[in-house]
Length: 546
Image (cartoon, rainbow, N blue to C red; front, side, top):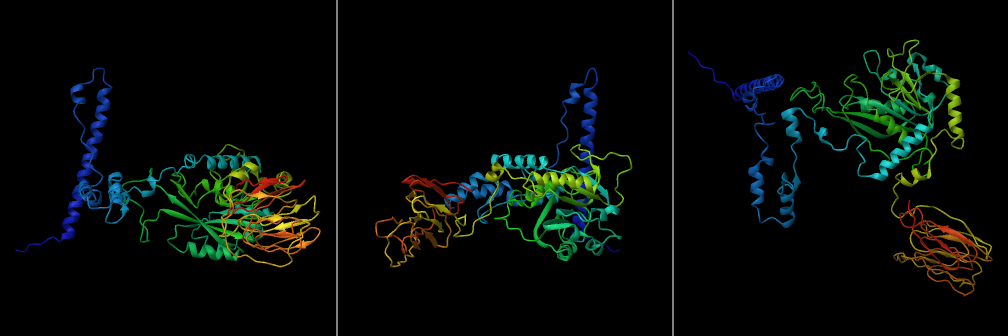
């Protein structure tokens, strides 16, 4: 007679199966109790004695809680009086703080193992309507941009994919693609699309390339390069499963090492766009490169609708094209949507956008007329006009170390009859015509902190940049170089703090002045766009903002 000894793995599997069956049984009994209670309460004379019987308690999320967050470990930490005061303070504030690791642990990974709930479900403020509740300026900016985009948008147009060639020779500032990869449509078919002939210069393309588990990221970059685009960003859609979670271990099987919960959208740029100089075409840093969205249960292939808003906030071009759109969810004001094959609109059927606007069948003449009208509102350019309030609220390009912001300035002196241009990076510069200065050139390279209040005397005006040089034209010509913001004064036979020759200009690090009967502005405070303004014989600088 032989006996078979079960292995440890078999015993554990058997125990897990038994626990799962037990949990299912408890869930069934608990649901039945609740159903019967509702039926009993509906009776004319409900039996209160039965209704007062407690329902079976719900089980804990995990029968084996993580030891890092267990009460025993927390109590142990609180007895460690030898810890520094800072760590003891964190222990008192955070129940899941681990001083040995100098970290605050969370149990989101354990929750996923126990319940199948993805960690990103717990991100607060992921909805666009709540994202900037604590940032009123950003919320105001997004509201203004939405109003501006809606007011300067063409009607929504759509056409079937078979009529894609009818778009020629129109050009588009933005092209959005969600390729319908299948056995009959691959990367070579995508690359063969006439995207280069539809793209304006400059323009942007946004292309969804999958979760990153396959070759999508690499092939996507190759296709962008073939179309003449340079990959510049990568927008990521992080999915949640708050409504689709079916419990632990129920995620669709994949060949990847980790559970895939995201999708990538590559962003490419064609032509030259400088974020600091081309604010008429792009507004950077209004949105982030991460979108958190549950998805559409009715259409698993649908991408986040927030992508449209992200594109419209970033690129001010009004000529927008989407390839492989869907009639139910892709039609939108300001966009021309090329519907994917098999997703056309029946003849005589009136298509509408998600907002209720009527979508029109593609007509080149109507679209061109609408585009020309929008261009007439924006100085001849096919862009959404910018407003002063949007310009004041939108994030600006980050300054490089040492840059002052504005790169130049011109002033006219009523007394000396000269024109001066100055550059500097921090400090104060004075420009005075009719100066009988020391013809010797002296250079002072010592850096000194800029004065808090800039006092200015000059009939001329200048601007600041870190090149520490400038030129002036008055009755005589002079040049000043220096890192201090000292001033030179006419008819006094000298110039202080820098270099002076003849009677033209002394260059400090920033700032400008206006004196005499002339008036002007100064730009170039350190890491600021506008520096100050001086008026009258003695003016004082006022800081502005970028």
